[in-house]
Length: 456
Image (cartoon, rainbow, N blue to C red; front, side, top):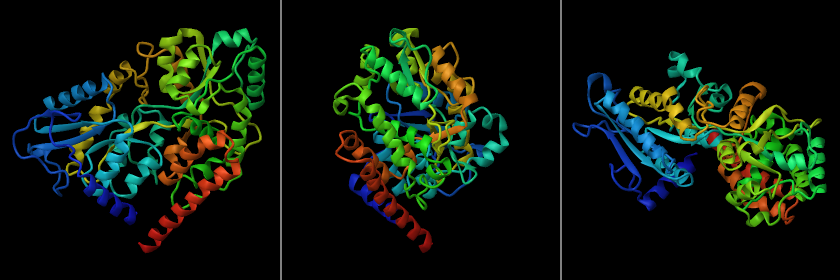
């Protein structure tokens, strides 16, 4: 960890990034009063709100597409109108850029007071660095706030029996299927087991229908399949309990190779040219009937409905009887918001966080198209029946989440995972070679963190 912090500091100096420099331009916005002295984020004083002193809360999110920037500005303005001593400085960046930005800011110690995260190892690295505030006591004092979230979603931010983040947009991987093409092939029910899944693929192919629209032009598409299959083949206490932890990661369970081999069984049923087909093209092919099924994120269901109407249904990754994974867990995870461990005014900042994740705020986000981790935010007024059915299934039929593997593994392992996925598809790597490369990265990660723990 010390080495990572030093590298981050060096990178920050080189980049000389100018962030949170006031409103106007560069994707930044500001809500609240500007007058009076502002509380420095890194100062050591207690909360200023009770005394009426000026407080500044810096907020970083990644939703650049309207209406979300305006929605967050409106939410922040509502808070500052009601609390005129509080100023909220907003910065909006992209999905990809936020990762590098937060790494630099963590190294410099200038973290935003509230920032956007993914669950899993992505959040854990901030926790280990002391850059995330423990929210456990705040939630214990406000059980209505705590109990308003899908348990599996809130559980994704619980580490060491403490809660470190609030889940916002919910997501999980599910198969969408074209009802007309299923009927055309004589398929009357969706598969529940792996053998039934293969039988459906054969039936579709026999009717002249390509079973899957698939592409890996954006290199995280294939790992979504891999991660879900690993969840079926690797015990939860190994995959999440051991291999998603930097001090114990090994990736040596035979279920990892088995999961990749199950993926290979499906490969003959894919649309062609998967290496040059990006996700948008994959989805467009599915709309056009060029594949009867597509493995999609649940948050995409409303867009699928907008293009296909009720001609699509869904089902989860089928069970693989006899394998060691928890067959009732689903691959996915929520996005969320964390509070900086360096914030000068934790009570005020948590109060802002409550406003940003309130039932009203989550309902408005859902109205704008975001799946929500807050129970009841998604209704028939803002989402299609398929999305609501899927959410109900997650709430009542699953045993929990298998975190996104690209967020669960440490970043160096994830780099190997993403970099080599297409080589495995193209048979330039065997399953054993692919997992072997991930094991090499895992060994380096484990040795580094074990060394740091011993030094402490």
